[in-house]
Amino acid sequence: MNLFLKIFLWFLAAISLMVGVIFFLSWTVQTEPVVSRWRISVRNQTNIYSATADQILEREGPDGLRQFLDRIRASETMSDVVIIGLKGSDWPAEIRDAAYTDLAAKAIASDAVEIEFNQPETALSARAFGSDISGQRYVMIIRWDRPRMTPFFGESPLRYLRYAGLFLTAVLLCWALARYLASPIGKIRRATQKLAGGELQTRVANEVGNRRDELAHLAKDFDVMAERIESLITSQQRLSQDVSHELRSPLARMNVALEIAKQRSNGASAAALARIEKESGQLNEMISRLLTLSRLESGAETFESQDVGLTGLLEHIAADADFEANAKGRSVKIVSMDDCRISGSESLIKSAVENVLRNAVKYTAEGTAVELALVRAGGRAQITVRDFGGGVPENELDKLFQPFYRVSESRERKTGGTGLGLAIAERAIKAHKGTIAARNSEGGLTVTIELECKTTPAKI
Image (cartoon, rainbow, N blue to C red):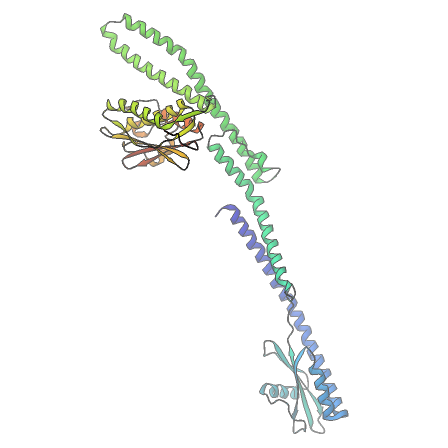
């Protein structure tokens, strides 16, 4: 789960909890005073109705009392009104219910309004009235509807739209807050990826905007770091290029002096001079590769794109590499070769594939064949070079394309080389908007190069 989603869900949960707590507290605060006022109202109305019933009964008799009961039964706040006669009265009880009779007995005993809340939606109130002298004693019992709290958004069907509006507002607000907090982090992350990919000019402070929080400070610190890294790498590249240029002149003079020394030497010094010539050749090769690498890294190695047939180019490279490998008891074998053409520099592509292929020939086991394959898939050309040299440790795979990097087992340089071949291959492939990667395969190492093919392959 990414940071944006986490922030969004936490904001939404916090707002939902706050709204729920506010609703609960509001309902609790409103319920208590409403119920208290309702109880007082029930007592007062019961007293009034019972006193009125007593007066009507004395003046108009049972018929008038029945008419009065019919009138008050029409009220929306009560669901039932009955009169229970006690102590041999001539008024018949309209309902013989245990709850009614028990409540009537309490009302007679207390001579006050009695209220029971046994039912969840209704309540009973009772009040005795009549003359104790004549023995005609009655109890009026009223069943009241309990007050209901009005929902926050009313009781009409529109309340659901109001609920939806509240929820949508909360979602939009949480989304805006989460985006405000997470957006700079995403920009810094993308800038970090670009910087790691070699785009040393990447800066992010201007993209973050005019924020004044910790994320803005982090973006400024990132720019300072990126500028420092760019300065260090540029200085390193310039130093390598300058040193390589400066070394070429004395190396050329040394080669001239070596030739003169060979002409004037005797048999005793021939072996030493041959050794000097060999080391001079390796030094000359290293300087040449350093200059090539410097030009590729600095972008000075420009090329004009041309149509390149990968099939013929790879077959030619494989033939040359196989000739060299045979002298070492190894070979190069073409596994598959699809027809594919690309736009780019033939010399750079040739250099990249040769470096990878010769590196594989160098490390593959004696008596084995390095496998070369070209497969066209999804509009891309996939060049695969596989050796059988035992592979490299997994934690060192991503370091193989660094200049001068050597796997620990070969640091003694028994295999020779300058440690620049794969680095040059990577820069050359990246200059063509391609990718190069290494992985361990069964018994060895597999290097895969991917380049974009032209729309249609060449027709033969």
